[in-house]
Length: 263
Ligand SMILES: [Fe+2]
Image 1 (cartoon, rainbow, N blue to C red):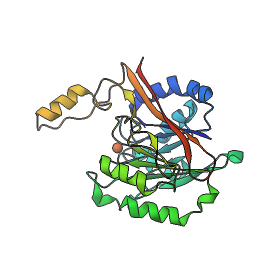
Image 2 (image 1 turned 90 degrees about the vertical axis):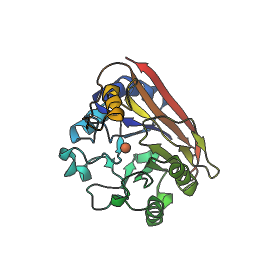
Image 3 (image 1 turned 120 degrees about the vertical axis):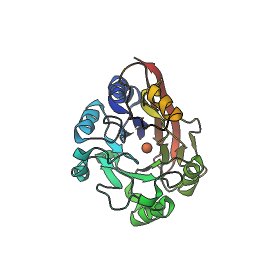
């Protein structure tokens, strides 16, 4: 089985870039399942049912979230009905933290979303290490061809540690949130595919998708600046392709698929 995971899709330019790149990529690589982080896909913060539908039209099958997932009010009462997970270790929040994708004859895939607690808003989330134990002990891994964990976290130490913590128990631990792709994609000792951060899809020459002119003002002045997402110019598309061994939670490969200077 081949699973493509796309990094944080940022705003309209990110969605347009997915439309340009993804359909061909699916055909060229015989991809069975496409998962994308959608926490910044609507206006740069959160997502909406309409945006999810739009991205499904380009070939994304399932979506993960992060610390920005609840920003769009239109999402909140429809979360249970969408192919979307939000961080499972968020307390008192709508939606699902993990969910099963049924691929028919190809089997079932479990997708888990967790947030880190280091340098994140830790007062609203539970310990992700204890939480992932709880989730994995509540399911039968033999029911799944793959278990994918999107670990949306700030600290590299916490991300790397999570990879080793669940090594052999899940097929892949894929870091998101930085919007910066990392070159440490590899198979860990127990067979789990790992990357500290998948990256993003959106404006390439700005500040993580946000207007760099505004970001410059922010670092020079205490006067608050409203974020603006850049909707034109060159774009980047960052993703990883994971191929399974079809034996337990062992990955055969994790390959970066990065496209730059997309116009
Ligand atoms: Fe985030």
